[in-house]
Length: 309
Image (cartoon, rainbow, N blue to C red):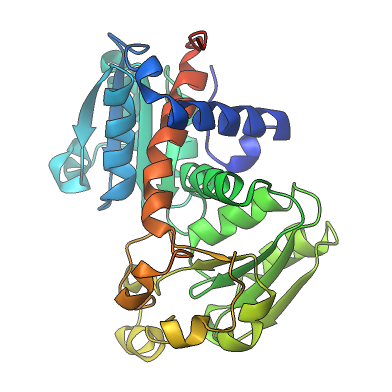
């Protein structure tokens, strides 16, 4: 039995296999529509989510399975003080696989230690978000044709952004990755991530607070929102929330084949006028998330892929 708590739980070969499978599902989804008949996915979401929870549910339904679970801690026995260990023991009696989102770092890891079914981390605090990372990788691979030799700009909340942390940890495994880290001083990437991941592996990166000046260099621009829920001080959030706003005027100097990704939800860091730019692929990215999660569910449940005609 396997659990996916971090993108690094998958070897590079396993990662590529899942992305390849997701790509095949994307091109022929009907072929996979009954593979999980009789299987159940439990979605344990201790904090709000739209895309991640619904894309997990859509993925399982698309595979012919069913879904149960809760969408907030208030609607679960956690509100009565039940531990994660006890919750997952119970859920293991009802479902075949589980996706968990929790505001505390390490909560899905704790669940995996007591679970009798595969646990997928659907986001734990500011730590990891492996299925979003798989979604990001599939989006880049399908649109750029490769995951190697790319210059990736990461912009916004790099301190608390779990999607950013997970994407860096994944992309450093592909040759030629180069990062441009765009953030205000207060939201710079954590020191441990620079030392343990980028510096330790001699990965080239630059840090800046000037988005416009680096746009011409980028193959991928990964925008993120400033996350109000991660701040202890409302004044700091208000001061920093509009640090970067991408609009059409800023995009004039960007490459024609640069793609703009965003894990969503968007607040105001990308002007709505950008949505019509062919380089804006964040809604397509959300769609790719369903196929990635279908591939991951199949892999963790040991479901064999049907033969292509």
